[in-house]
Length: 293
Image (cartoon, one colour):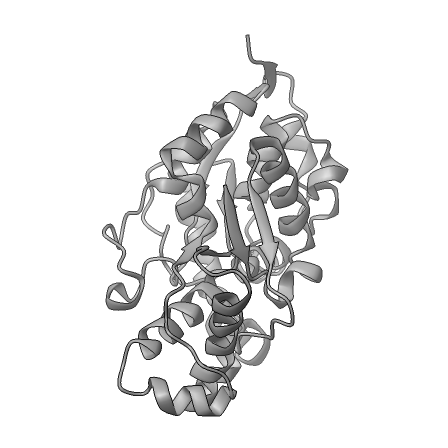
């Protein structure tokens, strides 16, 4: 199956592990992501807080490029922030503002591209079957708190999500590996996003509550599908431990890393070896990598 592909800025930098593991999984199950040529940053938080016009024009240009280059293909968007901005842009393309934005980006746009997240793509029944067939190891030692973050399902008028507070598709995909998923209260709460840079004193409690609730509900790891969420949850766990005199020890993985490991990828192939918080030890436990029979 083919998709047009908007990787976003983080996939070659802070989200390189996501890119590696995503490529591994896609090769294993026969998905073809065709990168849009000459794509630009979606603007993320900075763009749409600067001005409404900039926050729409930046992602809308990418939709227009996808329409021209890869007509008829849905667009795969791995980053939750990019996904959100593309969804907003798609709504604008279906509004009375379309002509104004077409002039701003100097190209026509129809709004004909379907925007899909990685979880949307992997949750298609045919794709789930392919994922199951590619799994060679059972990750039975993992008790996962699936962290969707705040942008995947909200606001519902933009995302068209059906299960806003308790989405399940990441949980279902994780369970294909033999891992257990836990019920917990913070799966769609905000991690603080980029505010850990400018107002860390306000943002740190958000991460603290996420770690605390995940651990209280029996999780020994977190899984996400957002580069910003991953950066915060993975990199800042030590700082939260220090600030709250805690000892959280919750490795954080991308959904695609967990799937890739279950498909036989090495830590280096899928990026696990380069995490901030140690992420290999849990996966090396004896009862974790049982071969599928």
